[in-house]
Image (cartoon, rainbow, N blue to C red):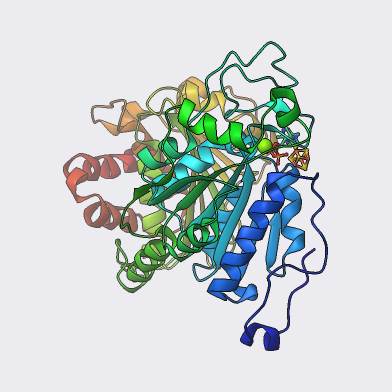
Length: 448
Ligand SMILES: Cc1ncc(C[n+]2csc(CCOP(=O)(O)OP(=O)(O)O)c2C)c(N)n1
Ligand code: SF4
Ligand SMILES: [Mg+2]
């Protein structure tokens, strides 16, 4: 765990951002060089350590954060960008610096892409030593073609990922490629930290324990590799872009001040006769306007001074299979929207029956099942009210049966005046008023 300096130290100019502990890396490991460059950049910037978070990935590179006096976060392999994004979004004023290996860059490639595409204000240093150092020198996404690693003993058959091109072509604002031996690396890191959007430095370096001995690969060979692979170094992409975390904050502020859907309170116009939470379930078929009927019940409840919630269940195929609406009406605020046992169940179709087993099994003599003659024999302890659609004397269709039965059930349940349902149609589903108002009217004939 990094030691945090006191605020007094923060005000002074820090001679180093490293703490007293020596780096643990193998002799000649590039990680030590890069961390010293990072320290120089931080010293030059003098950014408050308490306003700075070093997020490390897994691997030898993942040991790095504990040698600095900044805040630190260390998580799972490949996920450092995801954590860093969360930290930056939570507090856009923080300087968030990610230290990750080529292994982490490969394992968390999607996170890299998305942070680059969004231009999240992170500074990402990829410690690119062409292999998984910590676990024994296995090949990674950046291992050069033909290179020997512990998992490619006859030479890597794959071709390496160009990390810079990948993030650069996907929108990253600042992309740099260099090596741990570059004298000007502290300045480049400093520029990257100053850059407001997503900045990535792909820093090539040596893993002296594995990659170097397997491939007879030293400083000279590494510099030669850059040329041999036909890759450019230096600042490869630079764009002025909107930094994501600040942009999202701005949008959220605007939204809070001016909601996209302005809230229109519904003033109560009708009385109600509900003295406790009432659970109503409508169980029918998808595409048969079950949810619309549920919505109207909710509106009517609110028009009658009740709180109302609706929770719908339907398959991902949306217009086939079941459609079940759980509606709660209550004189008190509703904290939990689930319905374990309905006080009333309106069973509309075979699809609805398939989903009603658990409701029917729990309902007692005090509850009511409203359904059509076809399901008169359904087993339940609940009192049954059979509603015969033929008595409605209107043409029954696939899309009006749910409202017909629901309206009839409401007439029987006496939760609020049926006029509240009529007004709900007129006010909130005016487009369908011509079709729905006669159905509500006709529902009176089912319960007469
Ligand atoms: C999801 C997951 N896969 C594998 C591992 C095992 N593991 C630990 S370190 C490491 C290699 C790290 O390589 P790199 O990210 O390049 O860092 P380096 O050690 O080279 O600094 C691996 C594969 C892990 N910790 N988590
Ligand atoms: S194993 Fe490789 S990456 Fe890890 S500390 Fe040693 S030289 Fe560095
Ligand atoms: Mg590595």
